[in-house]
Length: 118
Image 1 (cartoon, rainbow, N blue to C red):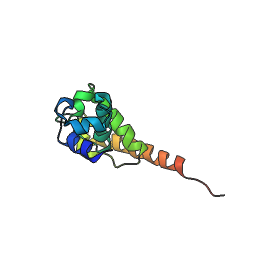
Image 2: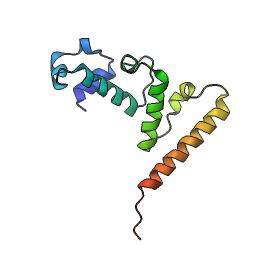
Image 3: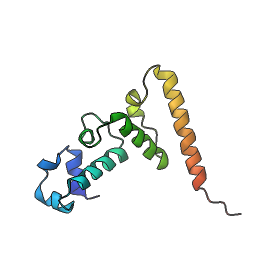
Image 4: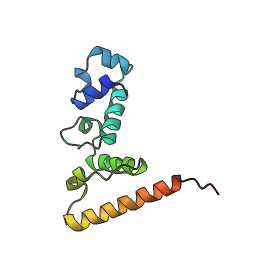
């Protein structure tokens, strides 16, 4: 991803406030910019609120589901900084269950990628 594009996403620039050179690097496509916003937000495990992604992805719950899925598939750490949003209700027991499920899925994914040499 272009560093200029990342900078403007990080600074929460909407499409209409982007400089012309950044728009041009995206092929003058707002849809392409929105794809970059979503990918950047998920890769960096950003909160939905107070972030540009809330204008791109309308359903907060689906955004966090995608974020967790991406994190599992790419063997990333569990996003503890988002646990207050991802886990509702009885925090202690829910966090333990969600974390256990997440760790199990990451372990399964990593085992599926292990090649045997026998």
